Image 1: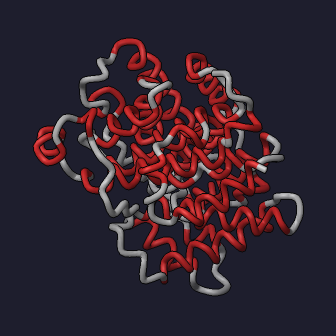
Image 2: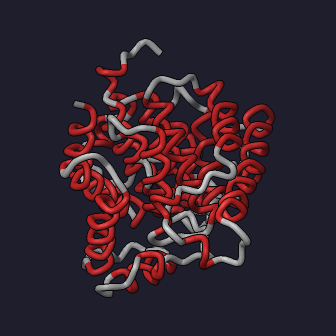
Amino acid sequence: MTTTLTSKRAATGSLLGLALGDALGFPTEFNDVPAILAKCGPWREMELPQRAFVSDDTQMTLALGRALRTAMDRGVLAPKRLARPLREEFVDWYRSPENNRAPGRTCLTACSLLKEEGRAWQEASQIGSKGCGANMRVAPLGLAPGLSDEQRAGAAQLQSALTHGHPTALAASDLTARAVHLLAQGTDPAGLVGQLRSYAYDNRTRYHHTWLGDLWTRSQDPSAEHFIARGWDECLDILGRLQEAVRTVSPETDPCLATGEGWIAEEAFATGLLCFLLFPDEPVTALRRAACSSGDSDSIACLTGAFAGAWRGADAWPAAWADRIEYRGDLLTLGALWDA
């Protein structure tokens, strides 16, 4: 990789890749691989639809990105400074007429509670849900410059907790943001899974009290540390499966067979990352592999695109694709802000 960090425009590449993966996988979601092949032809030749519409995955990524920009414009990123604009952006998304892209039930339920004035966000959080809806939108926290490791981790878990309060959703969001950040900084993909496993071990019993407040008390766990360790343990388990899959899986087989279908947070993270790691230097091929999968294709491909774009930068994507992606202006504006 010869591109320098300043010139590769990792934030623009990651946000565009996320949206392109979302748009490529949106039409194939809920289909098995034979049905996708019958509809789209050979997976290595899958084409972006002419009208490249995205799902709620990209919409909520942009909501988080705008909230993060607002919070950082007001000063040092801190829990209350982020929670307020985040809540407002999620409620705006909930009320938007464009929120018609098969959004997840957890997000809808939580956002309907978040819109009630005076309700603590912890009361809206769906503590039993570890759906992938939180970590498919977390990439901006891996891309925004100037954050400490503690800010990035705390904010990644907070943005998850507003809707998906299960400890595995929190840990998977944290891991996803960490992976995007490491790739944007130039970490070699070959060593990435090992670094993420070390990170998970180091943070296994670390509950971010300042960011999450008393969220853990809404579970059946005896302590905050026990609560968060449950999430990290599930992520460590899937990281072990991912490490084995990178070594042994044929790129021609459905990636969901190795690391799961992606409807839940840790599987979406792992399968999205697997597709990238199978083709670290072929970003479009990685997106196609992710979109031609039997699980939550748009969320898996959206994560693959975020990883690939963070690693390869803005030039990873064909201009003919990037030029027609929905919300292109919003994606480029945020990307340019953080690449500057």
